[in-house]
Length: 613
Image 1: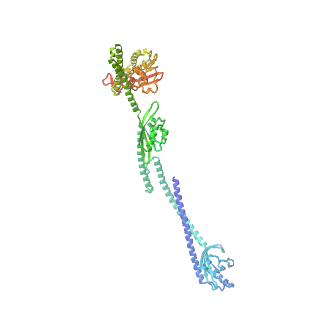
Image 2: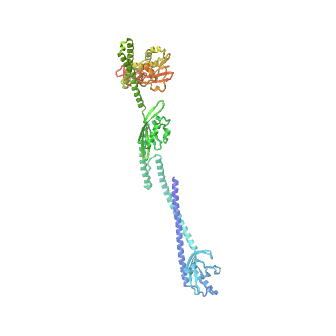
Image 3: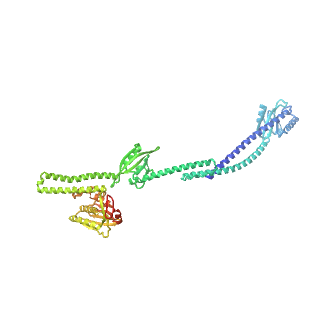
């Protein structure tokens, strides 16, 4: 760039200088030529004036005798002593005498412009080429009466060679001076161009650095020239630009960090229904494999018709639209989609925010199911108690046989109400974080053996075999023995209830990392895959009719889940229809130091709510 600018400046200067010198040469030559011509014509006019004062004497035109011809020749020779060529011409164009040529060899001059002007106006002049002597001449002619009846034309001429020689000398001097001026001016322009191009190159380099994000100031050269002032102005501009970019970058990074860390899915759509921005939560909610690229069409990314329609309504002019979308099939997730209009200058678009309301919908469903199930669970025994009590009051208590059977039914249903009430109170305590635990060292072997002994009698009635896998060497766990027994006993009771006659139940335990995992496996009817995530919900039953027939309240697994979680463990199920189920729950291994830290005064550690050992 530097050399390119340097040569442009240098060649431009040289072109201007050469053009100026050519113009000077042209106009100077023209002026000198005109001045010389005017001087020459003035000189010829003076010679003509002298000739008119001493005209030749002619008796007749043309002269007839040799003496007159000789006299004319002498007169032209005398006049030619002034340096001019002298010619005498008749009005008919006949040359009578000439100081340089034989008049007999000269052609007729009647058509010469100076002759015509002299005859018509008394004098004439012209500049042209002489055919007779083959030279360029300046001609001046006057009409003169020489004593005859007809006048003659006296013509005087001087060659142009003199002015050509003068102009050549002048041109040589002019070009010599021009060459000297050209060299001096070229050297000056070279230095100026080099300095100017170097400064401009520095400005260009500075602009390139600024474009690349390097805002270091441009150092001054101390010249105080206009380019240095321009550099100072560019430094101020770059500093302000740097500050503005830093501020915008910080704001952008902050906004990106906030939007990227949001649990809610956020996306921005322009007026052409193309994505401008989307965070990772948006991609995860819509189950996209990767974050959609900016500029992607909304209909290519989003498959939810409700969301697309909401965006189109906002782009059509509505300020805010709310809708609800559902994703997934087996495990559905619910999201509240809020689409709001956004405008920045002449650009319009829409902001989409997706709020996860799956838990809210789940809680609403659980609340509805809970109310319905509690009402149903209470209505059945209460209806039975009320019906048989009314029957007894109506006279059946006087019948000993029916009275005893009706009273047994009333007692059975009252016990069922008591169990249901107790379970509900237990869940209420757990929800209120008021469940007290006595965290102690619990032997895994003793816990399993005690629960199995309780279940063997009922299992033997259905000829179900209960086996225990060896668990010697297992570490003790930290927990409330009575509560853990409730969990294991509930799983064994469920396995016994839902396993067909002559089935099998296997109980095992294994240490894994910092916990012991208990497993109760059966060969029962199994649990459908769609129901497995919900079996730990309150009152949820896979087979409601059979569960009520067997006397279950539908709260056992829910209570077991709460107890395990309060201990710091977890519970889950693996099942397949027709091939049985495997229930697992984990309990932390007993750590004496940990229990000691949790014990306020030594001895037994007591905790409430969701605290764990």
